Length: 185
Image 1 (cartoon, one colour):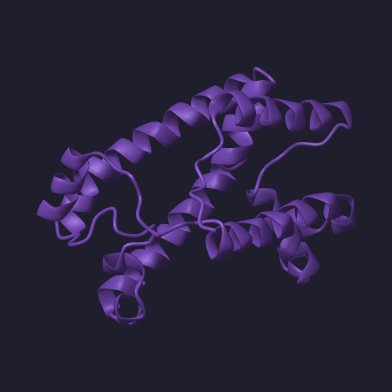
Image 2: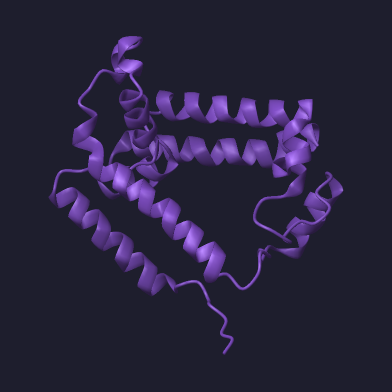
């Protein structure tokens, strides 16, 4: 029997996120994916080289379980709960992406022009991913957290630095979309 899965509606997903945030707040925890990267660096011994990573990583064990669940849940959703890889995006967006070199915009989550093995093995593709990774790493460290931490936890706690960071994330996304992608591709 075939069935088509639809994304959860906002009135289900939103309250579940709210409930999760309530429990994190109640137990004095902060949510964020970049903190998992800090914890993994601490586990790997980076504290010997940089005092920023010299902390008791076991206190963040709950967050490592969260990220493991995210990875496992994403795999399950993609492998068994996704009817196809296409992404419903606006026709105008598809045309704009096509004009800058994305041949199959919307056909899959990860476009081959950035994420295929052939692209990653090319100098241009490698430099794009390396540069993007460095910018994301530097940005999340400089902003004191990542997009998920600031946008979900920080804004839920009415933190001004998180509002400023989220505005910066959106400005960065607009600059990337309208200025840098057309130049790069």
